[in-house]
Image 1: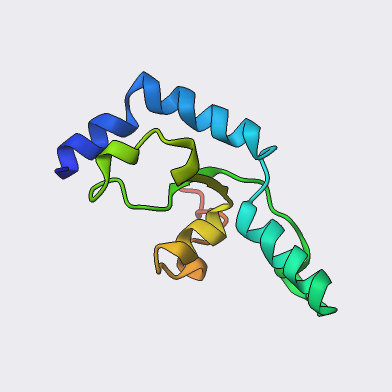
Image 2: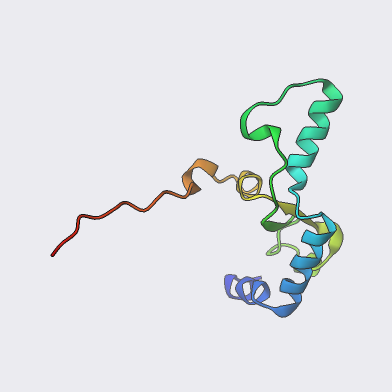
Length: 110
């Protein structure tokens, strides 16, 4: 798939419907966070910081990349709900780079 085709796919009604369906299937919870907590409980490990919580899922991730496997684009078994942090980690992005910052107050100019 080309970048243009990928963009068209993500803007399609079929994808928007499937995305909501997958988020509802996973109860709007990040599945990587859930798995991390389940594994920690099995191993008796104590998690700290942001890892102690199951974060709300905001993204639906293709486990097999859409560009390489367009036929699996709407396949339930290829889709998983993830929070923004886990989605960025899956794609090898630095999650700290995407932290929202407060807007600075500007000096009033009369």
